[in-house]
Image 1 (cartoon, rainbow, N blue to C red):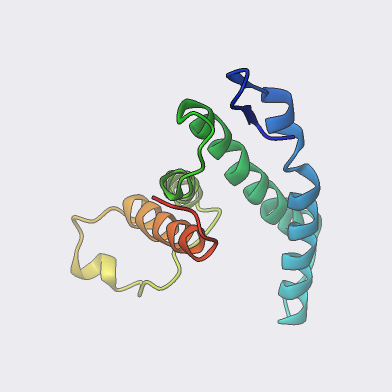
Image 2: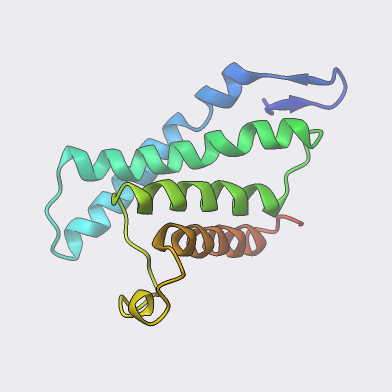
Length: 135
């Protein structure tokens, strides 16, 4: 059942909150297994960060689709990834991939939180475009 019904113009928040639970748990388990295969120690915190991050990523997009009339857009992915990147970097839960740590010494006017939002938003947008979502 979709989050938004085109015919009745109805947004279903319960379906929006429940639908991503199982995919988030499965993805969190797969990412934790990949982390363990690379030599990392598996624990409940790591699994919770992976599964919870994916769940929040899907949950943030849901009201955006409802506001947009139920049409999925890659902009929703960019905004959701950017918001989670900003919060994760500012709380020091996650790092910023693809960036050298000396970047912030060379450019002190760039805040790490903003750089994290840009990098994670760009990655989410790229994955959305690879998945076929229009902008």
